[in-house]
Image 1 (cartoon, rainbow, N blue to C red):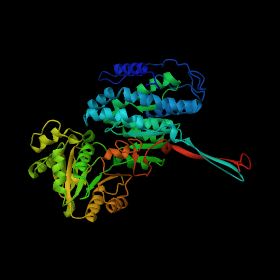
Image 2: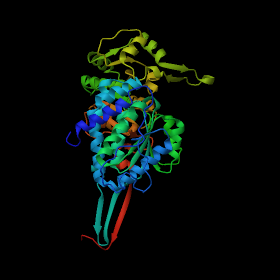
Image 3: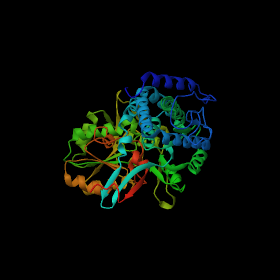
Image 4: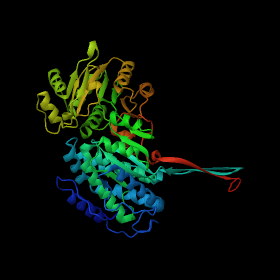
Length: 498
């Protein structure tokens, strides 16, 4: 906690939670406390000389007001320079870790999905999100002078966050976006807006006290499609970041502004006869059960080579997973999906029952008609490749296992189930040809070999963290460079080294 005063962090969060403790919307003071600072903004005014929008600490009822406040904050951040960016990153990472238990419970209480231990862990690992150190300029020199290319901010980023990882996503976004020199305005998922507002306000209070910059991350208190549209249209918002379902991704890409979109996924797993079955089973259970399978990168369906399918399922049963019978699978399927027959003999459509998304295994087991031991991590069953649990992105702790006869069939089935999202795929194999063939065929943003899905984000593997993985638009795992423009500065004939 050397980067921040831990007592200050706890005081700020306690104050915010106290104000938002009731069921009624939070009431904000008319003015903010003064802070001693020298950011070039003229004391309590804005960097532009216009009156600042004070007293909100990031939480606004009106989208236009939230965007305007973020723009004023961006101008202040420009004056604060790299040092201010570094301080903001330190504050957010420190506060996310210190308040992981309180905020994790707050999010679970509001959303009613996922697991508390994993909600807490997702906040504690915000420290793995990259910061200012990623923005190293590139320089070259020659007979005709020197050229420097550096990363420069856009200004204000308009962001949408999901209900599945509300506070972790916005926390990681703030680190990336502010490290790049931008401010951000959030239109959160309505089902997780209150906990998001708590975190945003706490972050802003601490940042204001430490730097004098207020509203570096603003949020719309009662988000809607109307507030989303207003945010997208605001002239201060130069770029969009959307972490959510296909509907909001499509809407963002139709705004005419550059959009960085983290869309849906349906990650397949292929297991062959060269893999260690015990290691594969443990990794599959770990990934598919994490936060009750809310992760978009989580294992959603398994294609196992026929010769080892029984061994794999035996190892899964020995390591915390429970296998369903055919009758139990049928009962769970009827409860978890609404099946609409296709018209004119066409294919039927399965819609996931939202009441089962992110619920504990015991809830799914009850629907299937069985009792499971305490501590059960995951349910699984053998299915065909066309089963709704294979075809649909179902975010619940159940995993379908499908037998395949060859590598070629396993890859083909995986490609079909992944739907061309190019999001995440996973393989358990020691065969280099299998690794290569699947990697080339699926061409996913994340390709994890012989580990759980989280290894793709640095949890058990090498790498860095972000909860916004831009697959439809191709930026991949977001980092500070994602939110910058590349600017070239050229000095002709002078300053050359050679």
